[in-house]
Length: 183
Image 1 (cartoon, helix red, strand yellow):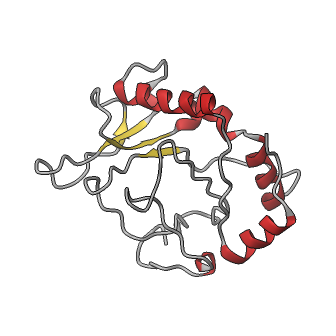
Image 2 (cartoon, rainbow, N blue to C red):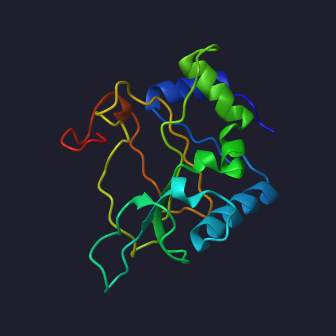
């Protein structure tokens, strides 16, 4: 299991503002997270749904935008757009404590710093039919400090063809959308 970044990777991260970590999970662990998020969406997971923020996505041809983002399970469907507070789920919390993630946090925040999770969330973005999301940086100008690390993990194949996350090297030094609360 990979537990550290190389000096060259740190240099790239500092220069570009992002780094592709590659695959951190074996097939069984990835499948477990996939099954877990499906169970959460279907309402069959053994979690306290009253603490989980959930938002249904729009239904093409039926609704203009996503549903309200509120705590609690809405309906048994895989059409959720966003699910937050996943740090409350033991399986997702264990993944967040992956040794490589801890290594990155210690390097960026300091060996003895207490690290908190601003948000652990699932974004479901079906190609060509999910809710459009404007360019943003998750910089959150309303916080008392800028989150320095975002770990993005694809639970399903993410390709240009199906609309994966896009990044622009070097833009971590500048807000691309100052009028938007997330930069």
